[in-house]
Length: 501
View (cartoon, rainbow, N blue to C red):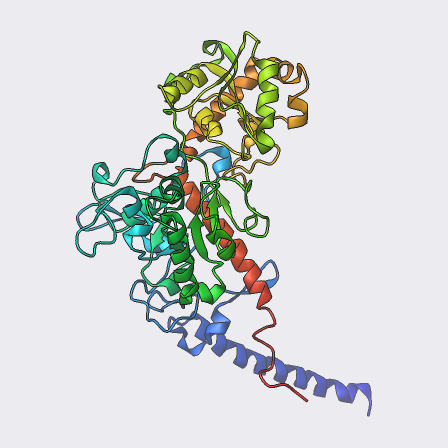
């Protein structure tokens, strides 16, 4: 057949294809423009193109229940939509934290929106002997917790040096305050009453005060109260389904005093600890990958930013007052004492909390440019946080120290770090400090005034204070723990149930 005879047939075929395509496309366009999209599969509607990549945006109706993070046969009576995670505040720039999830109820009072909290916490209802009973609080009848609605009437923590390790007390109070809508506090954390909904299981054991007040035998006791409580706690936790579910990895235990939980820590080492440092812990039990370092509660009064003395108003170059003769890594204090004690610009003396010692230390730090934070029996001490509260630039001489919130705070902006081997060289430390210009010191001083709030314990807690910062640190650790657990499960659930022969 010739080319001319085939040409009309080709044109006719092309026209038929074009007309058919038009009739197919027009109804589809009509459906897309229709307000009723029930004819279109949700998988098609939810598919969009972003940077040439297909992304499925799965939206969940507000009324649909989100499954809890851990399987449970117990129904969830609390939330139909559990809270979602939010981004952490940029503390690096010390900007005021955002007030997350604040709602206004019918009475005009601010309340927390649970859908915006980044951490859900379940707290065990342990009997008072584990917590406030250690502070000599006695409830009426079967009362487990004290009334914390009035901040002026809450049970008091023992004073003196005991107070520096009171972290368990402040965290427990904060969780109890979540039941009171009249208290204004951050909305970053909520307390749930169904453990299967929780990101964290909080263990309200006042381990530090238990050690400080009840570790010695009394009368005819064969076992101290402190040891007895630890044994009972281990038995309780090991028998709980919550512990068995993840082997305790999502449990939070506060053991801030370095000698607290000496017996139980080895048996509960899979849990997350809140500690002062890792000085007396084997690395297999406590480490920076799973545990949280919390600041000591400082003992000196915080200096208001507007009352803080500038460079010229601080005549003392370097300040240290405390125990000088220490064991282990603390022997460096003695070496530095003999190097610095006779210098007229340096205050380096023995001191204690007795005989107005705390007030004297506060005044001395407030009149000093630099405050020495030297390793003692353990790598950390309360002295660092007293210095921060006094806006006295800390000089950290402790090679193994771990610092609170260091993943979001750059301590080099307001602290000076000196290796112990350099600090004990004659003339090295004083030459270093005298070589820091007024401008550089003022820059660190200004930074100190901005970050001091992150180290303040208070009730009720406030956005960006020590309690709020600890919860945020816990949230970041939990995310890391969950990542490791999820990675282990990659192939576990996809393996065949029946062995193939």
